[in-house]
Image 1 (cartoon, rainbow, N blue to C red):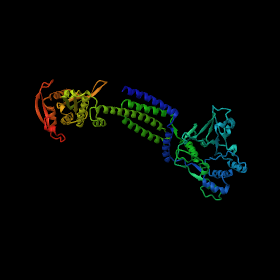
Image 2: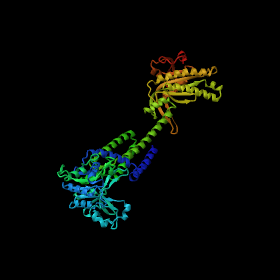
Image 3: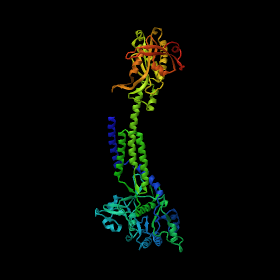
Image 4: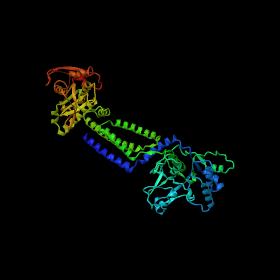
Length: 622
């Protein structure tokens, strides 16, 4: 027990260290964690409605095909977008947000760019994307202090005055119309995007994302964080879409056919998700999710304060450590491993349910990693408990198979009926001693004597086992066996007498094998029934499963009285317990050492209900 406790302590400390390393550094379970949270998020998104005031004007495949005859193939002249701005602005949108790149001036259609900028004049609610290049190119970029006002960078107390950054502003747009922000959708280690930038820290200068720029300009509070975890709404393409070509055609009709207020008060995102333009991303909702809907989701989240909140990593570490310590205490207190497992299963189901319910409160819980870690710890301890128990059972089988039929031992172990502690039981004890052993050994070598004895004992022990008896021990050339333990046997007296009768028959067969020169070889069998203490008895170094008490002593004395009287003698207690199962011949009363009263003895002469015992056993006094 002490060694088991020491192992449990050392192993638990080792596991706690591994948990700390896993959660703070390795994070090998993150893909599984993301997979579960994505599954829950996807289910939750179906019941979440996106903001109806965020809409998309989409350049889809149909728009590219229809516009080709009017304005040519992609890229279109920017005057086309100017016309779109004029048409949308007439309806009074809250904002127009371009998800299109205008980083290069059109040198071949200068007048087109000029018309585009003319459309921007006087409008304060039009926003454009700013592209952040790789930080490796920052040394070639402009000084941030010189372009901060134009780009809308926010200076902090940590701003480096000489810092440079590689950026690509929309050069086709006149600087007085720059209302810029980045469009950075962030992928996790599994390649799935779940977060969107709010502010990027460029050497102490904060560069807002396009959603943050739009929402802030509209007067909404924007959190001062690097990024947010997006809260998704609906399924794929959740935001209302308008075909770019449909709107363009309607704006150019003398008499428009569409509702002239359908975009009033809306945040209108203009972009392209035509298949040829490949503006798709992998998200928890779908592996082919439009970049336009991602931008719309980020604007929606910031506008309505509906982004997800995450618990700090240390909180999950505490949950993991606390859960493992709880399981440790259960095993330390020797609480049944199945009960611990059922409780842990209930806690796991409850944790997953809470994770889903908390999504409605915009709290994204990552409980899979703590659950997996505590389950691995539990299974390790449970497996060890099983192996220890199995080893103990196998040891018990090996131990008790020396005394009891191995099939009986397996039944005992499987039913957990095996008791190794001493207990008082009503049993029948049989002693069988060889007569004429001296003459047997005089004419044979020691090796032959041992071989014959082994053969004889093997035959007789098989009879004991056949009738459900337990072999106690060999005492020289004497066999001691008993019935009624370790399995309960209400017919222990009957089975003991049946075994004695068959042992007498086996003796006759064995004597035939010996030949006429060993005619004096015989046995005496004594049986008595009564209470005895049965169990593993002995020293710490060696214990034997045996029976002790007055019942055992009397059975041994009765066996000693068989010589010259009868091959088998049983006490009146045994005879009474056998009832009408056998015919008994009385042999009178005998004085027995240690007994004040004489003991009445009987010999079974016929097995009334045992058809398999015939021949000499039934014809002569055994």
